Length: 67
Image (cartoon, rainbow, N blue to C red; front, side):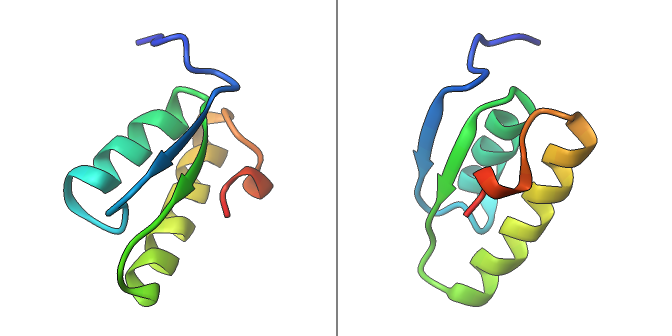
């Protein structure tokens, strides 16, 4: 699905799990640059690693665009 988000930037709160993670995953596979936040650093780190892998598999984002 093409939502027309390629190259757009989004900030997602609560992105380490659940709905926030799902939104981040969808946006990154659509080619958006994302900034993710969460309360716990460990969960955030794990989510960022998984999202980097998603981006690489989708070919939609550079790893540096996920911080």
